[in-house]
Image (tube, rainbow, N blue to C red; front, side):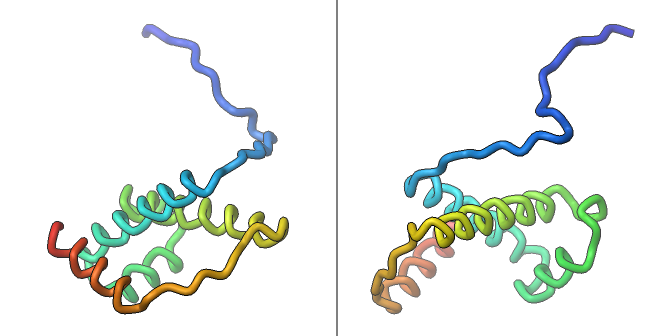
Length: 107
């Protein structure tokens, strides 16, 4: 059997990754797209319950991806809050609803 050597992060490693607002926005767009794919499997409520009630290894690849990105976003937001890097922004609810409808019609 032929083998190759690869590099991996050590088991006990904790990596501090700096994230700017653009990367954070891309990550939020990713979770939205994963969420839309999950909608094909059932209701949002059922999908979230399913993900939270199973072990990671029992989730399918899409559910694992959604779960992983959710944890990443939660950590980014936790650190942003801890470092006073969050700001409040007033947005038009109607604009959000229209953007969501437009996005759904593209899918």
